[in-house]
Image 1 (cartoon, rainbow, N blue to C red):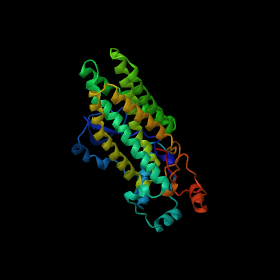
Image 2 (cartoon, helix red, strand yellow):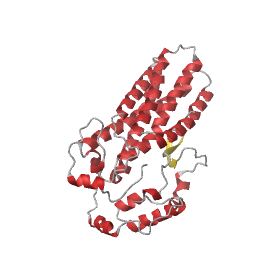
Image 3 (tube, one colour):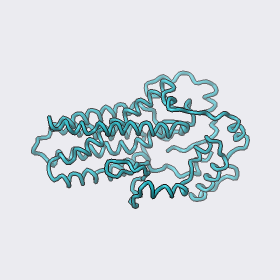
Image 4 (tube, helix red, strand yellow):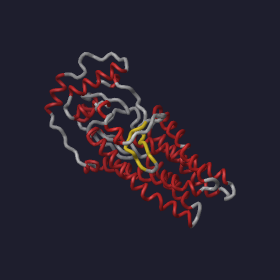
Length: 324
């Protein structure tokens, strides 16, 4: 209903980091503005509009309509006089609001499969990202220059992720950059020890692929889950990535026994991650699910027969939504 009034597509969300620690701020690719601490940022929340989709789920229709009208004005789009049909609002208001808990991420076989695969995807991607970052000083050559290159390669990685997310299906671009990152890390073992520049180049290319994939996960995971549990799903999977960052230093320690062993393990896990990604449902160009029943099926699962009610809901949705 209001999809044409909102800016689309939005830029992929990236979490701003300070050192190896999340600051809790949301940044966008190309954002070169000054960094703020959480204490500086709290005062600016009053300028950030609430999500209309969330307001609708909370039955706060008047506030949602005001935000939509404002968005239309900012984007120079003529908004209709009536954004929400009063009859539909009465139906939505009469419905009992569904309460959700963390166990709802595992409610059905399909949802549980998506959640488990998401946890693995986030954790293994985090292992590769942080292990490569922590192992940078151990590369040949000047440690300061290598750390600078490791940080610099993230800039084109984020820009590439932003461009790919705007035009191509999520599963294939995430799997593609993971295959790229994992493949070049596996090639590290065949490079002679005295080919320092080639070794560093392969590591940076691997970091490029894994960083691109990591930045896309925030968008992809948010698109897979319905409004009711979307924040919960992103939070749980992000927690899994913290587990990966805890494990990452032990991959670096393996270099004391064999210099190529960390890269073999990281490359293998990254390629495995890319294969897992291909089993996710595609979300590009699809309407964001509003209920648990609207979540797409995992690839390879039988969808089964749809009930008449579910078909009617898909063909006549109460609220049309934009792709992320």
